[in-house]
Image (cartoon, rainbow, N blue to C red; front, side, top):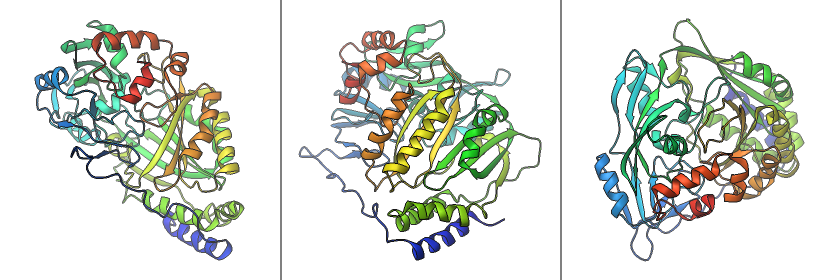
Length: 463
């Protein structure tokens, strides 16, 4: 087996000999001042493109403390998990709330495979904690650094035709609201708030604990297989039906993609080796730098050097160890969810638009499949969905790229990922979400003074 990075380094060397020198993406974006005029320290999101200067930062250590601060702290009050969202959910000049003091498993039901978890628990910590009691979350997202509350509130998802997004496995939760203290919600207790705030954008209050329907620990085989992109697109409906978990990446300007499949097996454990994705991505960047003025050279290198030498890789382990990945290289992201039957046409249009107008793009485009659910603000409400995620290196200009692809997503009836960039306002969202007006009504009832709403959320809810 030839290491992917070795092949890519050779391809970069070929590109250096054939094409012009590199282009964009070598300058660190300017940083905002560490303090504002009032002496408040800056907060920045993970990619660095969002910032604000909260007047107060609080880390409550109990549910009662959360409820108390929602009544008294300076507004807007915004909860923050890992700060991984690219949409402006968090920025505030009022109060920034972290739930890092509310973590861990509270109780579990071994027979029913259920667990009640404090909402500030990070997904990466929840995996081993649940494994210790013989359970695992049925599915996990590509990144596991988020808090449980943040992942649920933004409809964070994994992939698999039979798997809902993370909030689809929520049986109950407790939420602190500005108007009602601590409120317990499930399908029968406060059912409207349950349906509205399962994907709540942190706009209904602050989740404090969540009861999850989990699954028994399962061993899976993860296979990463490079393939011609045209073949993947043709086979995608069959691939989605054939595998427990499946997604693929499309690499613009190469004609190459890669499928990632996970299926349950009884084979012996074969742990995955050291992560190579970050190194591979940087080699793709260098290939871009050498060939951005001559994109056809990039495709020639991909077809003649990369494709013949890439080999599949496999690992076998418990699912929670293989579903998520390390993503240390910063980027900005736009992701929309379209009806599954529209996913391939939409993706073809996205790749064609990138290749026609954005030669600087080197990040792969990610495609996944997510089951339908009934949470009112879920992008997957009432329909099997295919997601398409477009990324831009954090040093590159992303707005032009996202302005290019967002109309394509809209044309295919796309709903945006709540944690990713989009330009939609309340009127747009009301047309996409059948229960949007109901969610707005419930939100206003638990937060009549709008204490949870920053400028971005006022646009989202038309407040």
